[in-house]
Image 1 (cartoon, rainbow, N blue to C red):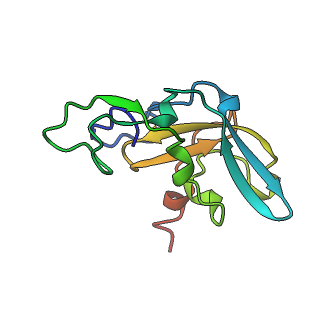
Image 2 (cartoon, helix red, strand yellow):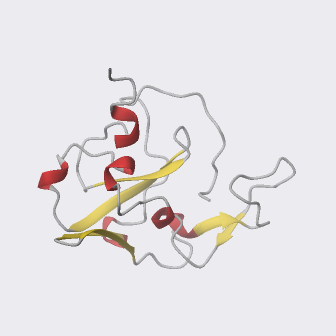
Length: 136
């Protein structure tokens, strides 16, 4: 669970700011090879992706929670990144057939209630899961 996940009114994608970028781009990596896609994290203790509720609320802070956070011992973002469908949480502009192994930026998006990823320096797009949702 990311820190400070209070709900907010949805904003157009072009106006939404990154909610919680990883401490540095090199904390998270994507490996792309003939076997598919793998994500990894080398973030240090108390990095944004490793924080969860100090009172151990489940997926969301309970109403009586004071919203304090602690390091939970592993990367919370990796549980959202599906190696079988990495495009689902991808918010970059590079076409999947042009993806290359390397560092990635990750961020929590409270509108989508999900960790999302893109390659460093890319323009932010809608998550893959939302891009074609309304297409007929």
